[in-house]
Length: 244
Image (cartoon, rainbow, N blue to C red; front, side, top):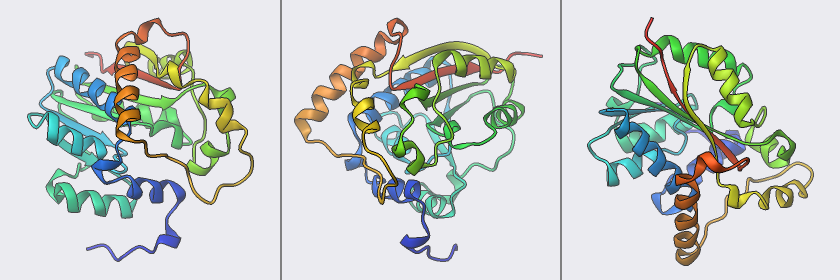
């Protein structure tokens, strides 16, 4: 068993992830992304989902409620978050960092932007995957919107759709699709940028039921039409490992 971790030793990202680990903390953008990921996994013929950089594990909670037929597994480098995930989903749901079967759909939700060597991370993922295996990756969009919020969460960068597509292709993946998500949230980016300086905490607001319902309905609609948007607050790519 891992030793207890004091709150003072946790990064702002770890604190935020543990704070939102309760499924009641799901926001509408969580639910919209989870629904998209599940649809991609099912369309790919997957029987399991491997959540790399699982963080709070909200995806696992959502899949257990809505798609229990998709076996959930996680991989998380943070000892504090890994311990929490193992307590909730069982140690046997922990991935081993080894080869990934073709029927396992890989998910990296807002992970790549934290990694200094993003190309190296994608090369490593490609090496683990079986030919025909698929992965969905989301990242925050638009480098001009980089702010103290990104700094607080340990982001290295934000991405354009073209940048993420080119990176994945250069690493050997076939890009099945690439699109912007949440164009309706673009007006919030300049507001976030106005807040300067270091942050003692990272703001992830909770909304009431009515706002969540409306936001989810709008997000589901814009996500279905995602190939039409020239910009958004996130980028999503669906990748496939080609046959040799």
